[in-house]
Amino acid sequence: MIEQFDAEPLPNQGKKMDEVIIVMAYSAFRARSVGEICMLMNNYLVLIDVQGIVDRDEARKAGMH
Image (tube, rainbow, N blue to C red; front, side):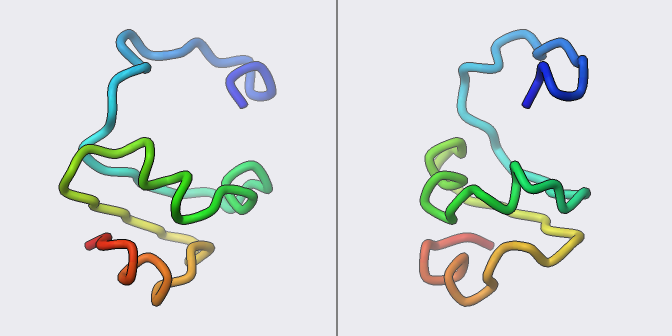
């Protein structure tokens, strides 16, 4: 994903995130399951999905807020 957009990774990117914000509906985001997104996050799962690409019921079942 980083190479596709000619971007540079943020420092400490290997650490888990406090929240995930999905703003664009790129296929790389659509391809991720709720479980894969949860694995990127800390214990309190906050997901802001502006495009509505993540199944809301599935996200709630996974404990996302």
